[in-house]
Image (cartoon, rainbow over all chains, first blue to last red; front, top):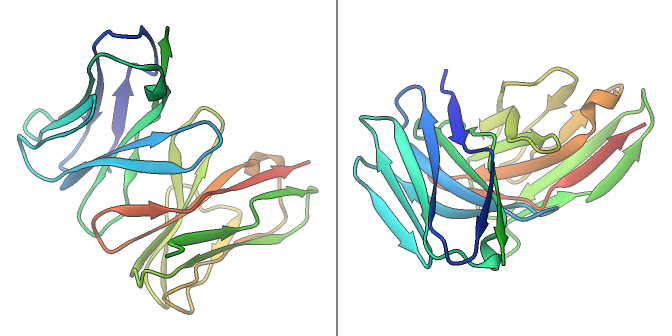
Length: 110
Length: 110
């Protein structure tokens, strides 16, 4: 059964700095998702990565996938306060249920 | 376009009471899911469905039941509510790639 681990669980960073959130998964996953969740809100889809070497970028966020290492990363460039949220990665076989990581709670400090 | 609609948004139950969490989607998605999210944690799958009339257990099904009589609706039934079922419940739907999440139901059992 697929297991998904994220680290760090908590991340406090200054505005303007760069950082990376890591997502490791235990077995083959056809797809890897990144979601954002604001406090008390639902999950917002950020990226879906479908193949080895896939890289997607949206604003200050960039996600990548290395299927051989079973690793996905979410890189934050020049962080701003609006990026404060909890970020989840999730994976699983096509047309089957997703398994979520425990999340990374990101706080951007002015 | 409503997407995935969950009702109610908030509910307080007494121990031993029962209730049904409603979930409706208008995107004609075959796949529907129920997750629970405990405070500070990721999402755990309760039940899922790959189409009308077909349901299966997820990671944490005990204390819950589901039915899927139509493509649109996927209600989650709690029988004999317990404090351990205090959580936020999210319904999601998918066509295989990409989940759409509802806004969640915050349930407290006292």
